[in-house]
Amino acid sequence: MLRLNDIHQTFHTGEINEVRALRGIDLELLPGQLVTVIGSNGAGKSTLFNAIAGVFAPSQGQIVIDGVDVTTWSEHRRAALIGRVFQDPLLGTAASMTIAQNLTLASLRSQRLGWRTGVTPTRRQEFHDLLAPLGLGLETRLDSRVSLLSGGQRQALTLVMATLANPKIVLLDEHTAALDPATAARILTLTSQFIEHQQLTTLMITHNMQQALANGDRTLMMDGGRIVLDISGAERQQMTVQGLIDRFSQVRHSALVEDELLLAS
Ligand SMILES: Nc1ncnc2c1ncn2[C@@H]1O[C@H](COP(=O)(O)OP(=O)(O)OP(=O)(O)O)[C@@H](O)[C@H]1O
Ligand SMILES: [Mg+2]
Image 1 (cartoon, helix red, strand yellow):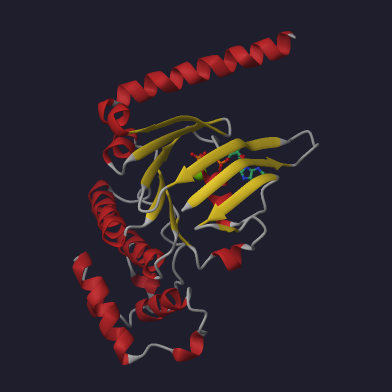
Image 2: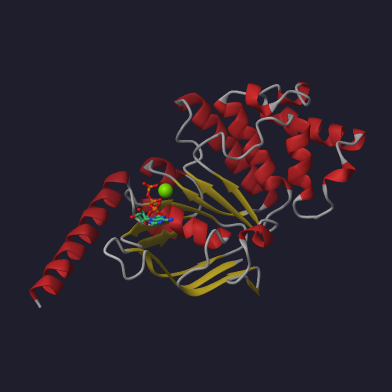
Protein backbone atom coordinates (compact mmCIF):
# COMPACT_ATOMS: atom_id res chain seq x y z
CA MET A 1 0.00 0.00 0.00
CA LEU A 2 2.87 2.36 0.80
CA ARG A 3 6.45 1.82 -0.25
CA LEU A 4 9.32 4.16 0.54
CA ASN A 5 12.61 3.50 -1.20
CA ASP A 6 15.73 5.11 0.24
CA ILE A 7 14.12 8.45 1.16
CA HIS A 8 16.52 11.24 2.08
CA GLN A 9 15.56 14.75 3.10
CA THR A 10 18.12 17.45 3.71
CA PHE A 11 17.20 21.01 4.64
CA HIS A 12 19.49 24.00 3.95
CA THR A 13 21.82 21.85 1.85
CA GLY A 14 25.43 23.05 1.90
CA GLU A 15 24.74 25.77 4.47
CA ILE A 16 26.11 25.92 7.98
CA ASN A 17 22.70 24.97 9.38
CA GLU A 18 22.28 21.93 7.10
CA VAL A 19 19.94 19.31 8.62
CA ARG A 20 19.81 15.75 7.34
CA ALA A 21 16.31 15.06 8.62
CA LEU A 22 15.80 11.73 6.77
CA ARG A 23 18.77 9.50 5.99
CA GLY A 24 17.70 6.53 3.91
CA ILE A 25 14.21 5.42 4.88
CA ASP A 26 13.06 2.08 3.42
CA LEU A 27 9.57 1.04 4.44
CA GLU A 28 6.74 -1.08 3.13
CA LEU A 29 3.25 -0.98 4.69
CA LEU A 30 0.72 -3.70 3.98
CA PRO A 31 -2.95 -2.80 3.40
CA GLY A 32 -4.91 -2.36 6.62
CA GLN A 33 -1.78 -2.25 8.77
CA LEU A 34 -1.62 0.16 11.73
CA VAL A 35 2.00 1.05 12.43
CA THR A 36 2.97 3.16 15.43
CA VAL A 37 6.04 5.42 15.22
CA ILE A 38 8.12 6.55 18.18
CA GLY A 39 11.37 8.50 18.51
CA SER A 40 12.76 11.50 20.33
CA ASN A 41 12.22 15.15 19.36
CA GLY A 42 13.85 15.91 16.04
CA ALA A 43 14.15 12.23 15.04
CA GLY A 44 12.47 12.94 11.69
CA LYS A 45 8.97 11.55 12.32
CA SER A 46 6.99 14.57 11.11
CA THR A 47 9.42 15.07 8.23
CA LEU A 48 8.69 11.50 7.16
CA PHE A 49 4.95 12.32 7.18
CA ASN A 50 5.59 15.52 5.21
CA ALA A 51 7.55 13.54 2.62
CA ILE A 52 4.70 11.02 2.26
CA ALA A 53 2.08 13.80 2.05
CA GLY A 54 4.12 15.70 -0.55
CA VAL A 55 4.77 18.87 1.48
CA PHE A 56 8.15 18.80 -0.30
CA ALA A 57 9.74 16.54 -2.90
CA PRO A 58 12.35 14.35 -1.15
CA SER A 59 16.01 15.14 -1.82
CA GLN A 60 16.38 11.52 -2.90
CA GLY A 61 14.26 8.37 -3.11
CA GLN A 62 10.93 7.12 -4.33
CA ILE A 63 7.41 7.09 -2.83
CA VAL A 64 4.86 4.59 -4.12
CA ILE A 65 1.23 4.64 -2.93
CA ASP A 66 -1.05 1.78 -3.95
CA GLY A 67 1.27 0.86 -6.81
CA VAL A 68 1.55 4.41 -8.18
CA ASP A 69 4.82 6.36 -8.06
CA VAL A 70 3.75 9.70 -6.52
CA THR A 71 7.26 11.04 -5.85
CA THR A 72 6.78 14.04 -8.14
CA TRP A 73 3.10 14.64 -7.30
CA SER A 74 2.16 17.87 -5.51
CA GLU A 75 0.70 17.84 -2.00
CA HIS A 76 -2.64 18.89 -3.49
CA ARG A 77 -2.70 15.99 -5.92
CA ARG A 78 -1.78 13.50 -3.20
CA ALA A 79 -4.53 14.81 -0.88
CA ALA A 80 -7.09 12.45 -2.40
CA LEU A 81 -4.94 9.50 -1.32
CA ILE A 82 -3.97 10.70 2.16
CA GLY A 83 -5.90 11.53 5.34
CA ARG A 84 -3.92 13.47 7.92
CA VAL A 85 -4.54 14.50 11.53
CA PHE A 86 -2.13 16.83 13.34
CA GLN A 87 -1.44 17.43 17.02
CA ASP A 88 -3.15 20.82 16.92
CA PRO A 89 -6.97 20.46 16.83
CA LEU A 90 -7.15 23.84 15.02
CA LEU A 91 -5.35 22.54 11.92
CA GLY A 92 -7.69 19.89 10.55
CA THR A 93 -10.93 21.82 10.10
CA ALA A 94 -12.08 25.19 8.73
CA ALA A 95 -13.12 27.19 11.83
CA SER A 96 -15.52 29.63 10.19
CA MET A 97 -17.47 26.90 8.40
CA THR A 98 -20.13 24.66 9.91
CA ILE A 99 -19.71 20.98 10.77
CA ALA A 100 -21.85 20.03 7.74
CA GLN A 101 -19.83 22.25 5.41
CA ASN A 102 -16.55 20.80 6.66
CA LEU A 103 -17.82 17.26 6.16
CA THR A 104 -19.08 18.12 2.68
CA LEU A 105 -15.65 19.41 1.70
CA ALA A 106 -14.02 16.29 3.09
CA SER A 107 -16.37 13.97 1.22
CA LEU A 108 -15.72 15.81 -2.03
CA ARG A 109 -11.97 15.61 -1.64
CA SER A 110 -11.59 12.31 -3.43
CA GLN A 111 -14.26 13.02 -6.04
CA ARG A 112 -13.08 16.46 -7.15
CA LEU A 113 -16.68 17.55 -7.76
CA GLY A 114 -16.28 21.06 -6.47
CA TRP A 115 -18.10 22.96 -3.81
CA ARG A 116 -21.21 23.79 -5.90
CA THR A 117 -22.98 20.55 -4.95
CA GLY A 118 -23.39 21.97 -1.42
CA VAL A 119 -24.87 20.39 1.70
CA THR A 120 -27.76 18.31 0.35
CA PRO A 121 -30.49 16.71 2.55
CA THR A 122 -29.12 13.25 1.70
CA ARG A 123 -25.70 14.35 2.86
CA ARG A 124 -27.17 15.77 6.10
CA GLN A 125 -28.65 12.37 6.90
CA GLU A 126 -25.32 10.69 6.09
CA PHE A 127 -23.44 13.13 8.33
CA HIS A 128 -25.93 12.56 11.13
CA ASP A 129 -25.39 8.80 10.92
CA LEU A 130 -21.64 9.27 10.74
CA LEU A 131 -21.39 11.49 13.82
CA ALA A 132 -23.97 9.87 16.12
CA PRO A 133 -21.76 6.86 17.04
CA LEU A 134 -19.06 9.24 18.35
CA GLY A 135 -21.31 9.97 21.32
CA LEU A 136 -20.32 13.64 21.39
CA GLY A 137 -23.66 15.11 20.27
CA LEU A 138 -22.10 16.55 17.12
CA GLU A 139 -24.90 15.10 14.98
CA THR A 140 -27.33 17.62 16.51
CA ARG A 141 -25.00 20.53 15.75
CA LEU A 142 -24.48 20.16 12.01
CA ASP A 143 -25.03 23.87 11.45
CA SER A 144 -22.74 25.06 14.26
CA ARG A 145 -19.48 26.67 13.33
CA VAL A 146 -16.48 24.48 14.07
CA SER A 147 -14.86 27.36 16.02
CA LEU A 148 -17.44 26.73 18.79
CA LEU A 149 -16.30 23.15 19.39
CA SER A 150 -13.89 21.98 22.10
CA GLY A 151 -10.46 20.63 21.15
CA GLY A 152 -11.57 17.02 21.61
CA GLN A 153 -14.78 17.51 19.60
CA ARG A 154 -12.79 19.19 16.88
CA GLN A 155 -10.21 16.41 16.80
CA ALA A 156 -12.98 13.79 16.57
CA LEU A 157 -14.44 15.69 13.62
CA THR A 158 -11.00 15.93 11.99
CA LEU A 159 -10.61 12.18 12.36
CA VAL A 160 -13.98 11.59 10.70
CA MET A 161 -13.00 13.98 7.89
CA ALA A 162 -9.57 12.41 7.41
CA THR A 163 -11.04 8.94 6.99
CA LEU A 164 -14.26 9.86 5.18
CA ALA A 165 -12.98 9.70 1.62
CA ASN A 166 -11.43 6.25 2.12
CA PRO A 167 -7.82 7.37 1.82
CA LYS A 168 -5.08 4.92 0.91
CA ILE A 169 -2.91 6.14 3.79
CA VAL A 170 -3.81 7.79 7.11
CA LEU A 171 -1.12 9.83 8.88
CA LEU A 172 -1.73 10.62 12.56
CA ASP A 173 0.92 12.93 14.04
CA GLU A 174 0.56 12.90 17.85
CA HIS A 175 -3.14 13.54 17.28
CA THR A 176 -4.15 12.98 20.92
CA ALA A 177 -1.23 14.85 22.54
CA ALA A 178 -3.05 18.16 23.04
CA LEU A 179 -6.12 16.59 24.68
CA ASP A 180 -6.92 15.84 28.32
CA PRO A 181 -6.29 12.17 29.27
CA ALA A 182 -9.95 11.08 29.13
CA THR A 183 -10.60 12.75 25.77
CA ALA A 184 -7.28 11.44 24.42
CA ALA A 185 -8.31 7.90 25.34
CA ARG A 186 -11.69 8.41 23.69
CA ILE A 187 -10.15 9.72 20.45
CA LEU A 188 -7.69 6.82 20.44
CA THR A 189 -10.54 4.31 20.76
CA LEU A 190 -12.37 6.04 17.92
CA THR A 191 -9.18 5.91 15.87
CA SER A 192 -8.85 2.15 16.31
CA GLN A 193 -12.52 1.68 15.42
CA PHE A 194 -12.28 3.75 12.22
CA ILE A 195 -9.09 2.01 11.13
CA GLU A 196 -10.41 -1.46 11.80
CA HIS A 197 -13.82 -0.82 10.29
CA GLN A 198 -12.46 0.68 7.07
CA GLN A 199 -9.25 -1.38 6.99
CA LEU A 200 -7.19 1.79 6.66
CA THR A 201 -3.41 1.64 6.27
CA THR A 202 -2.15 3.95 9.00
CA LEU A 203 1.00 5.44 10.48
CA MET A 204 0.55 6.89 13.97
CA ILE A 205 3.24 8.95 15.72
CA THR A 206 3.10 8.98 19.50
CA HIS A 207 5.43 9.85 22.36
CA ASN A 208 3.56 7.43 24.59
CA MET A 209 5.46 4.11 24.37
CA GLN A 210 2.71 2.20 26.13
CA GLN A 211 0.28 3.49 23.50
CA ALA A 212 2.73 2.60 20.74
CA LEU A 213 2.87 -1.03 21.87
CA ALA A 214 -0.83 -1.37 22.72
CA ASN A 215 -2.17 -0.16 19.37
CA GLY A 216 -1.76 -1.63 15.92
CA ASP A 217 0.45 -4.47 14.79
CA ARG A 218 3.89 -3.00 14.19
CA THR A 219 6.11 -0.36 15.83
CA LEU A 220 8.92 1.69 14.31
CA MET A 221 11.49 3.67 16.28
CA MET A 222 13.20 6.56 14.52
CA ASP A 223 16.42 8.25 15.48
CA GLY A 224 18.61 10.67 13.57
CA GLY A 225 16.52 10.38 10.39
CA ARG A 226 16.66 6.58 10.28
CA ILE A 227 14.37 3.72 11.28
CA VAL A 228 16.41 2.06 14.01
CA LEU A 229 13.85 -0.49 15.19
CA ASP A 230 11.03 -2.21 13.33
CA ILE A 231 9.15 -4.79 15.40
CA SER A 232 6.01 -6.84 14.87
CA GLY A 233 4.61 -10.26 15.70
CA ALA A 234 5.93 -12.20 18.68
CA GLU A 235 8.90 -9.84 19.20
CA ARG A 236 6.51 -6.93 19.62
CA GLN A 237 4.09 -8.85 21.82
CA GLN A 238 6.91 -9.56 24.25
CA MET A 239 8.29 -6.02 24.12
CA THR A 240 7.84 -3.80 27.18
CA VAL A 241 8.20 -0.05 27.61
CA GLN A 242 11.44 -0.67 29.50
CA GLY A 243 12.59 -2.89 26.63
CA LEU A 244 11.99 -0.04 24.18
CA ILE A 245 13.88 2.40 26.41
CA ASP A 246 16.81 -0.05 26.63
CA ARG A 247 16.87 -0.50 22.84
CA PHE A 248 16.78 3.26 22.43
CA SER A 249 19.76 3.72 24.78
CA GLN A 250 21.71 1.06 22.85
CA VAL A 251 20.97 2.81 19.54
CA ARG A 252 21.95 6.16 20.98
CA HIS A 253 25.16 4.75 22.42
CA SER A 254 26.22 3.18 19.12
CA ALA A 255 25.38 6.42 17.29
CA LEU A 256 27.64 8.29 19.72
CA VAL A 257 30.45 5.76 19.26
CA GLU A 258 30.04 6.05 15.48
CA ASP A 259 30.27 9.85 15.69
CA GLU A 260 33.38 9.60 17.87
CA LEU A 261 34.99 7.23 15.38
CA LEU A 262 34.15 9.58 12.55
CA LEU A 263 35.59 12.55 14.43
CA ALA A 264 38.71 10.56 15.32
CA SER A 265 39.39 9.42 11.76
N1 LIG B 1 11.04 22.74 6.91
C1 LIG B 1 12.15 22.52 7.62
N2 LIG B 1 13.24 23.32 7.45
C2 LIG B 1 14.38 23.09 8.14
N3 LIG B 1 14.54 22.12 9.06
C3 LIG B 1 13.49 21.31 9.28
C4 LIG B 1 12.24 21.47 8.58
N4 LIG B 1 11.40 20.50 9.02
C5 LIG B 1 12.06 19.78 9.93
N5 LIG B 1 13.32 20.25 10.09
C6 LIG B 1 14.36 19.69 10.97
O1 LIG B 1 14.42 18.29 10.73
C7 LIG B 1 14.66 17.58 11.95
C8 LIG B 1 13.55 16.57 12.15
O2 LIG B 1 12.36 17.28 12.52
P1 LIG B 1 10.94 16.58 12.69
O3 LIG B 1 9.94 17.66 12.83
O4 LIG B 1 10.74 15.61 11.60
O5 LIG B 1 11.13 15.79 14.06
P2 LIG B 1 10.09 14.91 14.88
O6 LIG B 1 10.65 13.55 14.99
O7 LIG B 1 8.73 15.07 14.31
O8 LIG B 1 10.19 15.58 16.33
P3 LIG B 1 9.04 15.95 17.42
O9 LIG B 1 8.87 14.71 18.25
O10 LIG B 1 9.67 17.05 18.21
O11 LIG B 1 7.79 16.36 16.71
C9 LIG B 1 14.76 18.63 13.03
O12 LIG B 1 16.11 18.90 13.25
C10 LIG B 1 14.04 19.81 12.43
O13 LIG B 1 14.54 21.02 12.95
MG1 LIG C 1 6.94 15.92 14.96
